[in-house]
Image 1 (tube, rainbow, N blue to C red):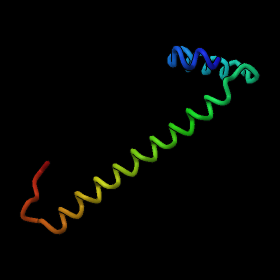
Image 2 (image 1 turned 120 degrees about the vertical axis):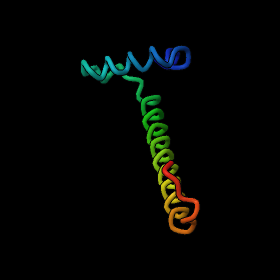
Image 3 (image 1 turned 180 degrees about the horizontal axis):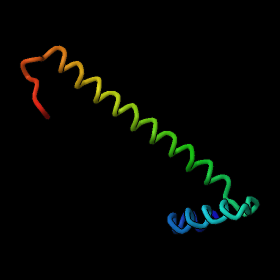
Length: 72
């Protein structure tokens, strides 16, 4: 499975999803699945923090620069 992961990520992901669906846990590529879940978690956390920063930035501008308010 590791070779498939390195050669064709999309096919690897589909294979892992299929194995999970049928409950064939012994055939799963656990090491790479763990890595992918951790990466997904980090990406989602980074996206959330980025969105929160943007909202905070806009709120600060709204509060401290009322003359520059617009509909956008």
